[in-house]
Every structure is written in structure tokens, then in C-alpha cells.
Image 1 (tube, rainbow over the protein chains, first blue to last red):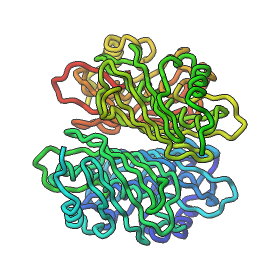
Image 2: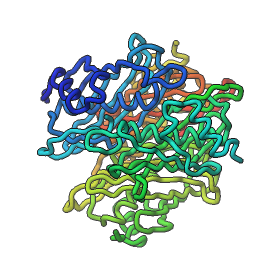
Image 3: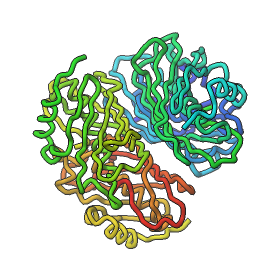
Length: 149
Length: 149
Length: 149
Length: 149
């Protein structure tokens, strides 16, 4: 199955539909069933102590799977998150961006499942992992809106 | 096991340690192993379409379990979230606050587990449920910092 | 929404469709969106040390939500488990049956979500909790078969 | 960090400690933080319809992470499963063994986290994925016993 949107189209879509987050997430790489997204960490993402907060990592995982799904099915979809399991395993490096690497494990007619590993830029060991399920609406629904943005 | 902090002490602690979120979360009820927290929904919590975003619900669940744990063990703790599973089941009501009801199912020496149901104020059916595990540090660690704030 | 099967009908259905497990699970109570199921613990459920194994508790949670769903939608359905999160919190009591209490939190057109608490018979503190999502097939599919049996 | 047990030692350990399952699980490959385990599917693993049951896949994921942890820390440990999230994504192929591939994402002092992908032998697309957390007891505890066996 081929991509229906390339990285530039996805980036434009994200900036148009979610203007409040458009300058934080950057698509680093895209292939069928696979995407890499960078979060440009800003002060508002930090918790006391200077590391990235849990909700910020959740949001990054959520938007990353959302973009991986849209790249495959096109911008028609009102895909919504139905489930997420997330493990926080290490403290993110201070002052470093986060990189989320997603693999779509399933892209069915009504459900998609994506795995995400998040690591600090320049550090191999993952700070978090997450799996998300998206419910995919029938063809014909035009507006897009993730739970995670 | 008794409470080590009452609702007023928890609220003060939250406002002091997490000034960026202090006017959003309000403790509605507190008992041993049980807490209810209100999120005063603001524009920045909404996604396109006007309902509360997934990361906002994740953050609410996270802070609710964190407060339930601190109420039992006192403010000494650097408790951190290690795992969360969350299900998004219904669209939150537009323009309504969210209420998170938490029950601590386990409060062990090193791990605590809390269940959370989130519903829109005035609507019984839950919009989301979550279970979170917190890792509890040994006695003597003084600073507090949830993954979720 | 009313029950489409009562406890006796569910028990007969279980024994007919899953003869290999029919004498282990017993429906203790049933109401709309709520069910209680007893596992008569046998030697084959135990791990070294004499407590009930993790897969046994998973299977109990799975069949409990499955029966809660069937009670509401009738025996027509080829419902399948799509997701489970489970927390093992305490060691089950030696020599005691397990009781699973399920609440259906959502019963949608295509997805159902059920929460389960498992405790040893006669002990209040839960040994495990689980949340399961079932995918519900369209009306007209006649055979039944859970992932968990 | 190096392996403390090789594949042959792990296999002997499994057969001695869990005689009831010893002829079902076979270690196919082992490296630091990585293991592959085959389940020789038998009739008792099947549900109506002839595919492998959910609890069987849960048990396979559980024992796979357990072996991956023991390979790194040695047979001293009473490691127990504290949490599992599992997604069932496709129907296993009829009559085929299952292969579980595990990567340890974290091996901390008190918690280990492993990711598992399960596929039918000879089929690339995964039938299930799981993430498990194990609680690791202090050095000195000698008996071993997973939640999953």
C-alpha cells in the first residue's frame, strides 16, 4: 500500500488544521507504515526539574500515530484515538528535542494500531514507548481531528 | 490507613509546586484511597471541533492519581508515572468541565495503582477511563514532581 | 437497554460453545452492563508456589467481559478481543476461587469496553484489574468465539 | 551488559521449574536484551474455529519477556508481572506455530519493560503485540516463578 500524502503535504495539513501546535512538530522521515516526528521542546513542555512532562510525551505519541495513519488513508479522515498504553521508562535529557518513531502494525478498515518509541535527540535509549489504537471513520467524512491535538 | 494531607493542603501544594496549572485543577472531594478532581476547561484544552483534547484528559488522569497518592504518603515524594492505559470512549460535552474520580487500588511500598473515570460535569456516562501506575521513591526524597504536570 | 440473555441462558451458551472450559466459570450475578463470574480454581490454573497464574487471570477477565457483552447483544455475535490492559497487584489467596466483577463502560455499535476487578473469594482487596475492548461484528454473524476461550 | 544464561541454560531452567509447559516453548534465538520463543501449538491452545486463543498468546508473551529478563539477571529472581497491555490485531494462521520476538526496552534495578511481537510461523504480519512490566526482586531471592506460567 502506498502513501497518499508525502511529508510536505502532511506538514501543511498539520499546520492548517492545528495552528496551535504547528511550529512544534516536524516530520523528519516518512515511508509507508512508518514515520518519524520531532518535537521542538519549549518551556511549556517542561515540568519542575526541567524534563519533558508526561502529557507532552503522550501528545507527541498521539500526533505521530495520527500522522502515520493519515499518510496512508489521506486527509479525509476523522480518525480518533480510542486507546493508548504508554510506559515512561527514563528521564528525558534536559534541553534536547524528542524524536518519536512510529510503526503502523495494523491498518484495518475500522481500526489502526501504531507503536511508538520516543527518545531524546542524540540519546539511543528510549524515554517512553506507546501503542495507540485509532478508530477510522467510513470514507466520506471530511474533517480531521485527532484526540491528541 | 489515614490521610496525611487534607484537601486544602493538597490544593496549596499543587498551586505552589505547579504554578502553571494551579488554577485549572480543583479538588472536589477527598477520602482515604479516593479523590475527585475538577478540570476547569479553558480554550487551550480544546481541539478543533470544541471538545477537550486527549492529552488534556491524560494530564487530568495523571494529576488525579498523583494527588490521591500524595494524600496518603504526604508531600515528601518524588512519585513518577511509569505506566498508563487510557480508553477514550465518548466525546466530552461541549462547554462543560471534566470531573475525574480516582480510586487507589494499590498503595504498595514501591508501586501505586489508581483507576480513574472521567465524565463531563452533569453527564453520567464516562468520556474516558485510565489506570496509572506510580513508582514511589524511598522515604527521604523531598522534591515532588509528577510526570503529568 | 435491557438484557437479551439471562444468567441461565448465558451459562448454557458457554457450556455448549466452549465445552473445554464449561465447568470452571460460573455466572454469579447478572444485570444490565454488569456481571460477576466465579472461577473454580483447579490445579492446572496454578503456577509454582500455589497461586493462580497470570494467563488464568487474563482468561477470566476476558471471558467475563465477553459474557457481559453477549448478555446485552445476544448470542449472535462473533465478538473478538482487540485490546487488554491488565495490572497484577497482589498475590491471590491460596486455595480460594477467584471472582471477577465486570462493568461495561461502553457498548457502542462497533466497540465495547469493560472494566474488571478480580479478587480472591472472601478477600476484599483486588488481586488484578483489567480493561478489555471487544470489537462487535455487524448483525447477521451467527457464530460466537471470544479471543479468550 | 552480557547474558548470564545462554539459550540451553534457559531451556533447562524452564523445563525444570515449569514442567507443565516445558515441551511447548522453545527458545529460537537469544542475544542481550533480545529473545525469540516458539510456541508449538497444540489442540488445547485453540478456541472454536481453530485459531490460537487469546490467553495462549498472553501466556506466550509473558513467558517470553520473563525469559529475556532471566537471561540478563540470572536464575536467582522471583520476577513477577505487574502490568501487560496487549493488542490482538489479526487472526493467527491455522495449524501454524507462533513465534514471539521480544526486545527488552528497560532493565532497571526494580522494573523491566519488554516489547513483544507475535506472528504465525511463515507469516510476516503480526497477530498480536504486547508490552509487559516485570517487578524484579532484590538479589538473594532464589526461587523463580513468572505470573505467566
